[in-house]
Length: 271
Length: 312
Image (cartoon, rainbow over all chains, first blue to last red; front, side, top):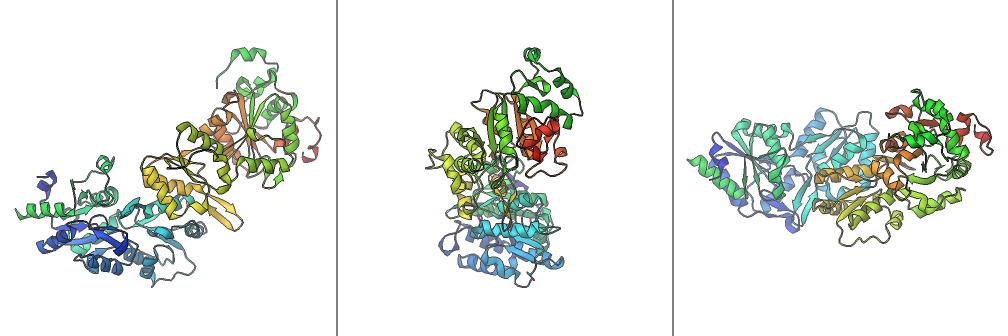
């Protein structure tokens, strides 16, 4: 039995990353479920454990994203998903910020309610093909023209996996703008502590009662551990064998995929 | 700074020592350096720290010319420098212009320069590619491609990033990223944050290089100024050492600081991008500061030369 399984006492909630854990995005139909993951989600829901999905997905609104996952056969509801865009909207409203958006076309409706004239900050999301030189330059000019440049980045991931290979994530362009303007971005989404805390609050559990399962060694595993949670890394999605020698982050355990993780967790908690 | 006692004995001018050992250097030092450098030729002449001067590196933009105009008096100053027994190299950070274009522009402005005297950040990238024997994905301006002629680019296993807005799209960046993740070295022509365009500020290569570094958890090899290797490579084939070389430029950090880091002496000219107090941006400060490339006679107090007296 896996060593980590012996240390599951007190776990009452599971937090799941979505992309690379439930499914691999990209291609026709928007992605392919990872074998066994649909069944694993169903088992978790039936187990009585609290469950929350915590994603940095920002290519579509939360509603569209959840619709896609439902189409792919997942038992998932909008209200179960913690995502960066709604969190960013709350921050923008609280601080009276008018964003210049550099995000995926599909995410724009999340910001419909906000005043975007005469922008006084930039919101950066995983924009894929919208990460053109010109668009990045426009964002740069907004920032460099502000007395107090504010850059909100929806995540800080390096890359993610689509069906046709690894793709550059928002963190790369966040770093580019940080360097160009000599500023520090504020990250909304994983690995920010606040983001994990809001997911925990939704479930009403303490960090030590929750376990995170993700494919991103830094943003999922490292972020959750920083927050006081336990965390497993799956060997699916963007996982690379060299992650297991990561200089800063060591997961509580490795599993081959979500199905294996869920089976071990449920078996252990049954005892 | 290695002292060479043999050379010391041949030195004709005791005054050199005095100025060099004077901690207040600054303007006074000019009167020492200027005569051997620009007036007399350099046989047996010595420089600071009892050095023999054999090579002079001259920056282009801001020092010899500003866009399509020569810095006043610079042609004459170059002519005088040609009268000295020194090797001259013109060194510049360029990501857009190949040597041939640079040469054309400079010749049009009346500068007496040969193509093989020009050493640019593109040349440096090329020589690094040749040393590593790799095939680059070239994210450089089309005009710069000329400087990479003859380098195989099929099935790339290296990435070179210059200033190429037209290539900095998501697809190309992703391709570069995947190559680097597979072990391809990332070579940056330079890491400028932004530059000025007619329509305003625009992102330079630096942000894109930084992004790729972050994505792949790697460090780019930067080949342009102010990197030490740039200055050392510029001397390749000249038979001169950094200690025998002086660098003249308008960028205190990239020209003067970089050269001094590489063991050369640096002279800052107050033309081009120079801003007051730039001298204090680096430590040690520039060995000398000139009003302009042509102004050495002013600080030396010698008015023997014609041609640029109106500039004094």
